[in-house]
Amino acid sequence: MDTPVVDEFAPGLAVEVVPGIRRVVAPNPGRMTGPGTNTYLVGRQRVLVVDAGPALPEHRAAIERAIGDARVEGVLVTHTHRDHSPASAYVARRYGARRVGRLPRHPEFHDPGFVSDEVPDDGALYDSDDGPLVAIGTPGHASNHVCWYHRPTRALLTGDHVLGTVSPVILPPDGNMTEYLDSLSRLLQLDVSCILPGHGAVLRNPPRVLQGLIAHRLAREAKAVAALGRTPATLDQLLGRVYDDVDPALHEYARYSLLAHLEKLHRESRALRDGEHWRAA
Ligand SMILES: [Zn+2]
Image (tube, rainbow, N blue to C red):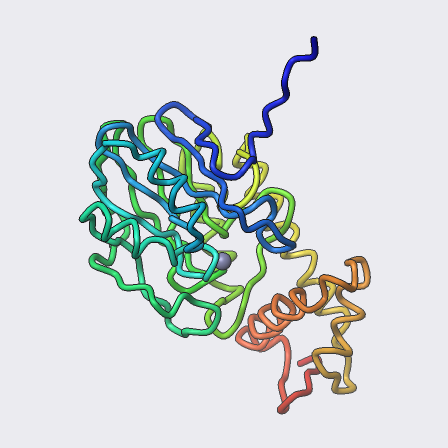
């Protein structure tokens, strides 16, 4: 008889990905969400929920099954994009727990219903019976992005700051490429054993992943610099040149990251902007 194969990304399943941390995948697969949003539960009896995900009834039920009769110490978010935080309101109410997260500078793409009971400073600590999570501010993908560091295992919950197979989209005006690269560099100072992203599988070898992301961004930036000429060009004209190696089906997202690159170059006086037109400085 064949051994049954368990799909570790099957929605609703609570899979222990590192000791003390379980992952429940939400049933919202897609181009930007991969197999679905990852909700993480840290601890067994005194639990922290990170990124409760979309407010889908099946997902809420899966989180409740995973919590069982444990006490919920906090409902934490990495950021408040609409695939990450909407279910936190329900989970917090159901278990009488506090919602912990930062508020964005700009509301576009964010969950309008998110309310924060506690805004975590850098270094703020939230305890579970499997050890604490520590807040590490990582703005860039979103202005209010926080990664959560699990001290006992040195695992880092990265939300959308670091993803597996895709490079996170930076969405101006809330997203900011300068901040994004700074946040990646800061994480390189941290002793991280593995990365638990907001979508997709556990990532081993964190330094290589982080350096790879930085190199990818700088290579894309170099392409943007090369594409800028003396003749003013629109964002869409530049998009075809800078992202000529990317499936055009993804260009609607790439367009945001290109804008974020151009804004960074503009801040550094390396690009000039005149209304809708960009050119070399
Ligand atoms: Zn996001």
